[in-house]
Image (cartoon, rainbow, N blue to C red; front, top):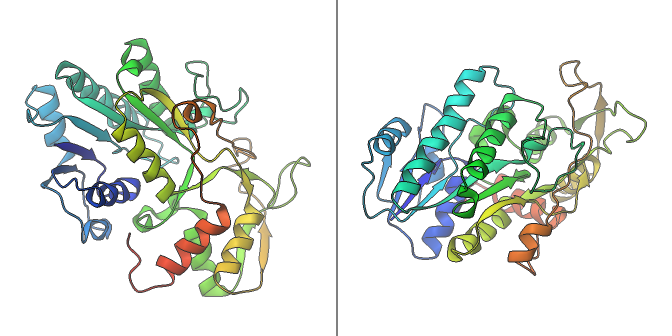
Length: 321
């Protein structure tokens, strides 16, 4: 039996489809559906039940996990980078993960969990996944993820568990994420509505307007890698999960206009003061560690991924994966 926290969310629901496609249906979804349309991410998928995060935490704390559980895939967290309630993020992202990990260790349950590229902050020390406590995240979300990574290493559990530092993931089933949805999803909406896409002007001479770079990775690639890790119980530790090939916002814009069959129409706006000084002009996953245990993986190019996302989902009546 598999427990999938965040199973109704973006990456979680896509990985649930991967599990179903591979013949795994005995899955407990741990999530809160709320009042938005996140529940639609579960349509057409098979699982045992939906459990509230509070109930699952109580089971972990009371050592009452179902004895049939052999793997916990822990993707559930508050991923809002603008969330200011540090106590909430520490409890929801860090302490909750520690409670799950402690129970999993006591019961010899395997755990695969979501970390984040947000732990790297401005990337002053680079983006190598062996970096730890000296990193300086830009927000409390990133810090809450870093604290759990540090805790696993301090307690020797990085030798038991697998953590994945996701970079800029995009693709179907992210529609409930609001401001945290990918720029591709937002771009499709802007271009459909007003025929133009707005990007931030650069704040440094090192990068032209729209030339700031991100390591974009398609959610289908993320799920392929997660499945390979799920299959191979010997893959343990903390790994970056990006492509290692960063692209510019202008590249993303061009790919989006192309997939929509339109000529590029980009407008550049000044960056808000709230972002100046903490805006990442360049991110790039160091994929050395993951490539050493999963060699030969081909990642979908930005153009291929954006085309598939738009023509296969956003521009269709059935937008869910």
